[in-house]
Length: 287
Image (cartoon, rainbow, N blue to C red):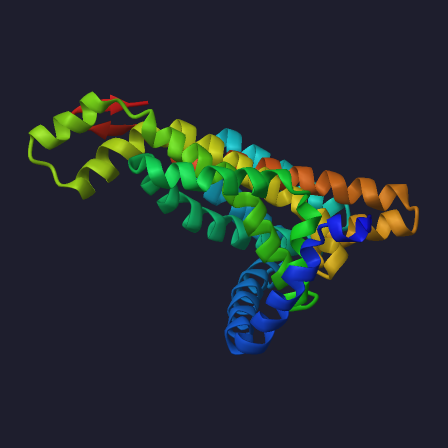
């Protein structure tokens, strides 16, 4: 028996699909690249244009005013570490990349999670897809992304978004399913609109679980930063890759700790900003 006939090669089927996409949707992909590069360039410009100490001071003041003293101290420590490690520009590039990737992932996952919590059929259909997205090794996402968008930051963004969507979507669905029905029924009984119930009752009650989803999305996005350095995304991932290829333990360690500093900064800032003020739902205080 010819064993070759029993072998399954997904690439033999996917490669023609990728070629067809490149041939027929090249203008669309070019527009996506232009848009993402423009957004990334704008964010990097804002982060890198002022002197490092001025940006650090501004970030500390923003954290203190909108979040609190504790997060302001964490912001100072994290950013000063990135500066004194000699990786300020790479850190800001990584911060811009992760900010864009997490924003896109949340914009996709949040509304889909709300719909999945309301429609069991959609949740059942999404579950195997999310299982695959979370099970497949993350570097695999880079292969089709590079084939479609070439090397650079855009395939890194796309792969990071794909990797960051599942935890945010799952936990958004769980958060809204855990909202007590009594609160929603109370809103309906008082004649509140679905929009009012969503923003004034469901989202405040779901916030603790949503914060866990956002935290996981940020951490997984930063985990992709190192792999993104392999496709020319730059930032701290490129520094980690450089340290590995040159066997420079100091460079790799500094870059890795800078990634940890940015992860802590983003996590504490986002969590603190969302938990800063108590929320109310029809007279009930949500803490």
